[in-house]
Length: 274
Length: 252
Image 1 (cartoon, rainbow over the protein chains, first blue to last red):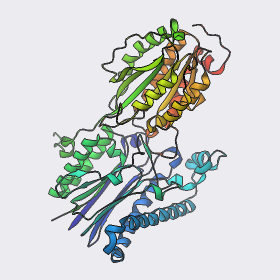
Image 2: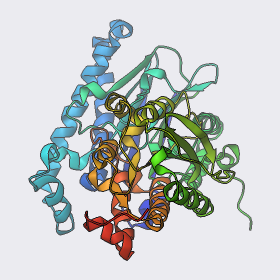
Image 3: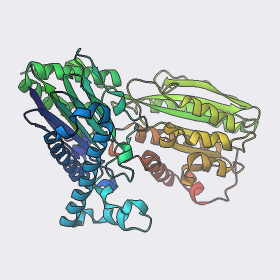
């Protein structure tokens, strides 16, 4: 009934400077749903553990979807009317758990010799200010897309994009997932003080064909129209032949990074199969 | 054996983003003579070098906003590959506020920044030798609310000691991004260094230009550009002197 996939590749600029991939992605399908998630660790100097932050975000997100769906009888009858409330609670749980997990990671993984200089610069100096909050070290975006038998939703914080393929085959970016403030490489984050206010939500009870999630490395490599065309091609290829499409995507993304944004790239998708 | 055609690669071409360099040039009467002459020469000479900078990452466009008695666009954003510099003259007052209003109006998705291929953070290079003769504080406050301007790399070149450097610092929001020239030769060199360095940094897809948390209002690219420009100036004895000595006499 549903299938999914995910892929993350190290960006061309990360390879050049021997930096780790700071994107992470995943998907999980249960009997009555399929969820995908992508996360982009910020990667700037002060976010030197953002790769771990991205991994935590995706794992927490997918686990949270599993729990949400397991208890869907609690909210399903009124979901259409109350989806904002339900999804805000869902986002609140994810962001709180993410803070708990990255703080635990920090406590279990002392600052290494190679991290010491940046740690002192951004987290111990007199001028560090708000950045003393160590969650910024792990700062990352998150997009989660879920398809079930009767509804679909997307929860997003930060940049990157979600594209849905509608029943008629058209691919669109749902307007509620857009945030006009995010551009030119600037993003909101799970490490924001006002994290809940920065989440965006999309809900549909239409029978969506697919939800494709991409980190900004992919988005920035295409103009808007070409990005939608890329997503449409991707959906068509996966529906036609999953394994071959996955092979083609794995082959293309590293070269797209080299020709385009040079950034890490993640794509994750859930789609309906007849 | 030839690689089979990947349908994803065949279906859609990656897009090059656009980097727009806004030159905001004082054309008031005090700029006439050697000052505007140096600006004209430097702009003519920097364009061919600028043509090679975007490479595979960005298409570079330049826009020219002149201000004297009122302000007007000498050129909207145009590809540097096709741009031909036509010498400008200098006469009239210094209506800096009018220029800020026009810049704010056009730094918008509905106006100059409407490409479907995406953008790099713009570069704004201000050149002036005097003090505003119109109301400029309210226009600057408005411009500072413009998201494009907030994240732009903003550099100002003060032309001579009579320039009100406080005004230029207000424009750049960074005193280190205000550079002073005292001779026509220095001015030409500075225009070239500032233009080439800021566009090199702004056009590249590097870690400097991505992954900045929204709450950090300062442009990471601007900070990096200022540092790189200062390094370049330090390698030139004349320009290096202007970095550290406020008492140099002008020779315009």
